[in-house]
Length: 462
Ligand code: ADP
Ligand code: MG
Image (cartoon, rainbow, N blue to C red; front, side, top):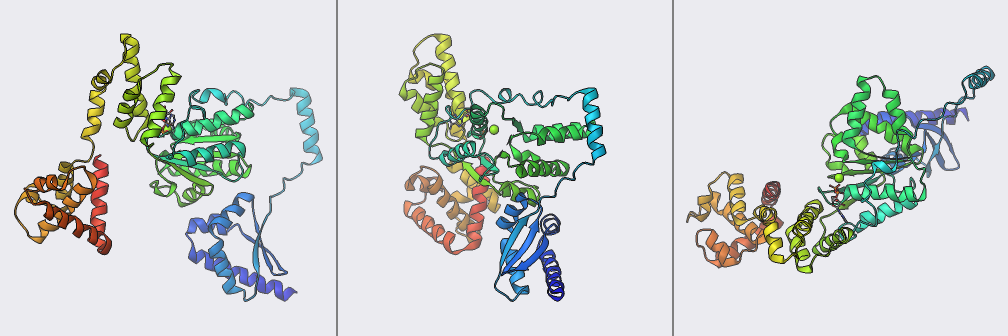
């Protein structure tokens, strides 16, 4: 028996050594170091872990690696089982208890002052409810998960991580969760705040030595809604603090909802362990709404303001603002303001005039043949004029064909029009270029890579 234990301990040491070589030092320290061998019995290798968070985390992220190493070290059929060993709280001694009784008799019980820091409803925007949130293909999965979370807070999908572009409804949906939970449990301590504010409060509390108060505040809530998490990046201390806040809440089974403008992996300078933690629940995205959804959003908003707007105008606005609901609403507000102030019926022509500036701006930011030519020329370090010239040298011909290909893909220009834009070439030349690049994208890695980069540039220019 003693021998088996000794052998097992040796195996465990080898396992730890191997894992240390395999994983990042901080992952090792945080995730592998705390593992403890418990026993090997009846084909089960039992490993102690400090809490439930660890357990699900390890199972989700390191199970393969752990199994891999252990099966090489132990030549038997066995399964790995994690046991959660919560550290027991040390019972108080009788003198401590007596002292406490004396102090309570003297001073009475101090009322917990949590409510003053958490005024649940007021931190949420009254309009950002589920009822006011229009669901369409671009957001229905995110909405479904949000709803699920309100019914099962802290259960399976923790954290819920919502990401998407600016003005697509992340904050609205996130606050909707807060409203919904408060409807059912008015006492629920909901804290909504931006990651930026979290950071500022943290920095302030460092400066004023009130870090304990800070921690208490953040760790005593039931539902944490933290917006725009991309702002936590880079700041090491904040990331550390957030990490611990997150763990404390998670371990107590409290729901956390996070938003960001991009998925966890794409947030620059975010510590790996935070990336993994953010992604450990469920990650959902919100896309730009399609035309139908945009119209529905406008209708809802108009109804909310008790104003009726003709359909052709709603259509016109919805077509003009494709990628940002806030701008879409802004346009509608402008139109509504006009009707209210001028007290007259709104016509499509008037709406066009009112919105001329904003919609026009939008048009000019769309991808045009001109923008494509300039971007491709810059990328290959040639001149736009070279596209139009008769030159056929390879250093010009390939960029020209790429530019033609992109113009065909990204603009509404017809084949003859594209030929015209490239120095009056025949439309068959355009077809040839198009097919050639299409083939190269499939077969030629460098070309595909170049085009990907040009596309990124173009999007940046949008
Ligand atoms: P984000 O946080 O993604 O930048 P917001 O949640 O602030 O975007 O949304 C911007 C505006 O658009 C808000 O006024 C919000 O109410 C509105 N909005 C966005 N998506 C929807 C939707 N699906 N239904 C209704 N309103 C929406
Ligand atoms: Mg937001």
